[in-house]
Amino acid sequence: MLEAVEPMDAADPLRHFREEFVLREGLIYLDGNSLGALPKTTLERMQHTLSQEWGQGLISSWTEADWIEAPGRIADKIAPLIGAGAGEVVACDSTSVNIFKALSAALSLQSDRKIMLTEAGNFPTDAYMMQGLAKSGGAAYEFLAVPRDRILEALNDDVAVLLLTHVHYKTASMYDMAEVTRRAHEVGALVVWDLSHSTGAVEVDLNGANADFAVGCGYKYLNGGPGAPAFLYAAKRHHHAQPILSGWFGHARPFGFEEDYEAVAGIDRFQCGTPSILSMAALESGVDQLLRADPAAVRQKSISLSELLVKEMEPLCEEFGFVLASPTDPAQRGSHVAYSHPNAYAMVQALKARDVIGDFRTPDTIRFGITPLYLRFADMVGAVQRLRQVCEQREWERAEYQTLSAVT
Ligand SMILES: *Cc1c(COP(=O)(O)O)cnc(C)c1O
Image (cartoon, rainbow, N blue to C red; front, side, top):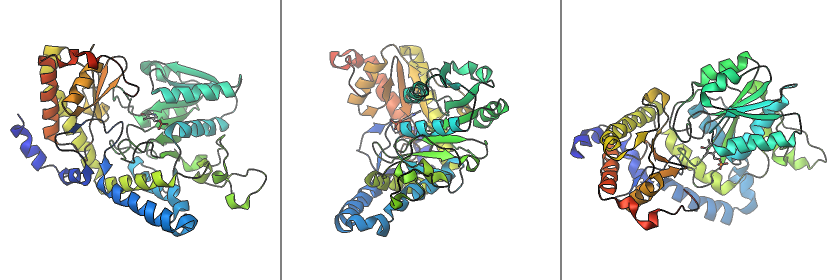
């Protein structure tokens, strides 16, 4: 079986990227959609940023090492990955905070509309941020979550903003961004797209879809490291919008130290406080590496790997009761593949003991993240072989695999 896919790995145009990552021999890492692997260049970059820029340059590195430019510079590198123009993206803060900023900016453009709409079962932080914002607005706003197949019919002229995750964190179902945006605009609603599971894995064209706002994550397919800065996109036509979080880095003259807030023109008003330079350095290194790969080849390989995994899993679905929880059509699927199984948590733990890292999402989902830069076709076959052993030898029944850990 493993030999059968050797020609696929040999013909893979992205195969040389794997050795650019720190990945232990024998490990099959199917969790890059939760935390991307460490690029070797990032080790050198961090060493330089720490010892030279911080250690030697101290505070002068804000200008001499261009720290102050990092949020815009890195964002302009992310822009082509998401179909944004230069000056439409800023890299800063966490995805959660950026969701809050994008939503509040969208609301500032909408008078007399009450509803913040999302999909029931969206990634929790997206809904939590909307709930918090709704509470802070007193009676002005209302939070509404409806099932995925009822989103379009829930759009009406009371909806101020629709927030959706482009690729669903559990199922990997992918929205037609242009079509949903068009339908929202028809009733005068604005849309915030969460690209956390899209950026760096599937092709995204925000401007082509006439998108309003978007946010995304730096530590998944961008390989920016744990807690990496996220990014925020606002279409040029919305740059006069005002996010509620008015920090000094969004001021027209931060070093004027003025008494009153005056937003800077352009995307920088979506910055808030001092950028986290160490994390920015790691993020830039991850993005620089990804930019060397052809996005079409990345998407194509993601599809081919996923299709192989789905095919290899078919017999296990029949024998051991796994159920594919992702779309079968690759055009409607992002870059992970999910299965449901009543013993999902214990299965994921038992797989880990066999050096295959996937993840569990409550209550019964197993996710396999497909990261085209460092996964091989042989890894798909190998992972399923090891899962078969876990099932045949009933390894998941062990007592130590039954209790949930704090992070899953
Ligand atoms: C990973 C992810 C986030 C992460 O938010 P943080 O603020 O970085 O913790 C947000 N939304 C979605 C859809 C995600 O998948």
